Image 1: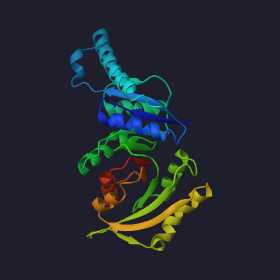
Image 2: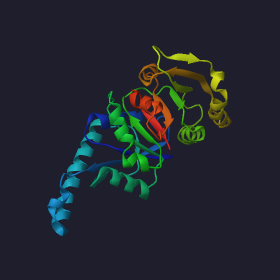
Image 3: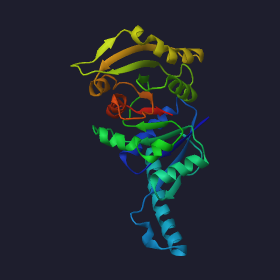
Image 4: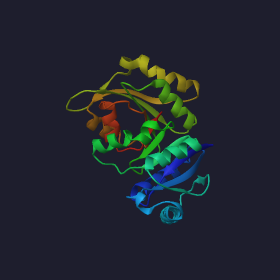
Length: 264
């Protein structure tokens, strides 16, 4: 059984994340821990001792009601590890604290898909994403999970990609394709022969084949992040590694409308 920490608020992004996770649970033996963090604007205003504890308890109760309303509305078919956790404080700090005390196999949250690359940079550049040690699933849209794409590019570690993917998914649970992305300014994406990146691609294909996986399509494409992202919109999940710097691979992940699994 895999365990996942899922962050929710009473909004559309969290609704999508819950529904997508319910679909994911059909592919992975998954148990969820729901968490919500209330971030008060001025928590120092409420003093210390009994007064502060009473104030924090009231904030927690309001957050728990918010979580309960969303869970009752969605009624997702998933196994839960326990009751929802509600914390008061800084979101990144509270989530990292939860992960340090209870190691999870996966972190999940919803993010409405926008065209803002800056917002995506801000998310992945946050302390939470930089310091978390487990893979993260960012649900941008609610789509069927009927095919997965392993996305490679300059800076993507094949070992990290294959080990993370194979830890979460069982062989033959879903069709898998492999794509290597080269950045190139051109009018439309250009598909190249697989053999041009054969050695690199084999570093991904071989260990997965040894574990029973069959990569159905192996392709190489040159183009801009915006145009390549549009080509990949039909995949139910795109899997790649955490980009260590701003680069075309980072920009492609930002522009993809698909849910993204970021390996670490």
